Length: 264
Image 1 (cartoon, rainbow, N blue to C red):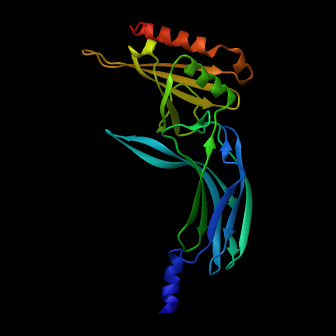
Image 2: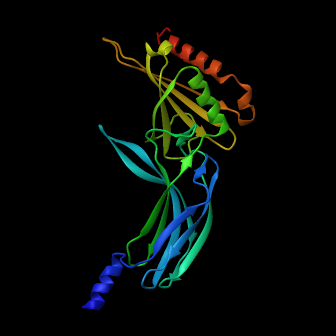
Image 3: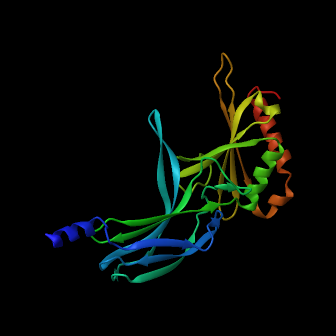
């Protein structure tokens, strides 16, 4: 009876191995990397490990019919080992270098976490005939210099951060590499507030250029429905510092608004 009970406890992971991921630096950026070591320690009985893997996970907004819900989605994964035997009490350290996808959503701006954003590195130890052991470490994704130029320009124009989220789906007309995209929302300054309710910004970086998508949410009037205005442009990494982005964005905002009957 005792033997049967111990086998049941082992099947539910009791007394099994522990896993802990130690990052050299939890800060990274799109197209960057994370380095660290996964520390696996055997429990009170030997086990057969099927694999050890790490992956990036974020929270995604999913639309389903007329409803919307949030789900954690792993979007990039790397196996660190194949199968191996882990003896009782044995320690197994696995160093790694994990490449961060170019279109990973950013989570930090000017040292502040973007409201609404979550990002973590998950570690999974798959053990034969037992419950998975996992570990989750928070990760901070900072903007590329070209992304910072656009964000700084909007702040100079008086836009204020509202929140950010990640939405499942695709953006038309751009090179999108992940099954979701990030929207960073801004409150408009006084000179635009009469016509638009918010500005939504989407970054889709590639190794060669930064794709920027802007969406204006037009305020609905008493007898009219609100409308959206879209615009997109590319930023060359090499010349991003040579452009007056505040002037360029102000021009686009005014032209886009005028085409839709808004005047500031």
